[in-house]
Length: 407
Image (cartoon, rainbow, N blue to C red):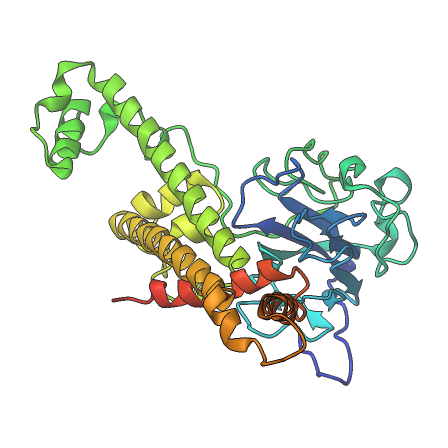
């Protein structure tokens, strides 16, 4: 599919039987849950929708009011999804420092920044479904005959599954939001296109499902001895209990460690967004950390230990980098807090105000000092929406950037 910028929109992709009906999945990458308990995933099938802080198809809560009530629109036109930024503070695509220029054609693999939310985009094509077969009535999510027009009348909490869509595995995105009922089985005429990161069905005899005794080492004892050697402890340390129990417990601890470490990295990313730091981790061609960019613990473990993927770090380097980043973030945050507060207090200190007091024979020096203090305060907070808090955050961002630089 080609696009002539400023000349024409692309035509729908055609198949022998009809059109590719496009499905878009949006997933928040840096949070596992929203403070309101709302969905961290959103799905639309050949329909436009709105994203914003309130009264939108997908609501992203933001107590700091950085996200607009109606932040952006995604319109479905001629087989493509087009992003329209209608916000005050901007929507950013793929790590850009400038807000997106609307309309922007969304592509599979794009990453959006909406306030402090980092949202991944997945677009798939469902072949062989005629437009006339698209369900309406209760199954028409947006309740309109204009597919490209977002609807404000449907609340996300009551969105229905798309029954006309092909069946998906349960761990795929459901129609509207994570946590709701899975989509109903597909009609026989629809065939789903393969999607990335989906687990493949394996026969019962697959090594992934084999009992512990069928490991390559030949026994649970040998496997535990290898783990002990890797951990730098005596090979006999794990032999005081049933090997199968110890192996299961090690697996549980491993999953917990990976899951919690990924959450800490997401919290770090959110904190950097709130601190308005320009230093943000974006996915690249090589050395990507699965703990940062892969949504589920199962996939993280798979990439780190079994099915290595090009462009991703192995297990040891992923863990090492994660702890290094967290330590840097913790030290930088503490240092930046001190520096920013010191800078702000210095600006408003009695000594600083005293230097600004104009000479006058008609008013007391104390009165003039107070007037100067008020004028200084107002001059600082006037350019900012959130007043002195924004001044502090600006100082904090500068100090954080300096403290985060490699020594």
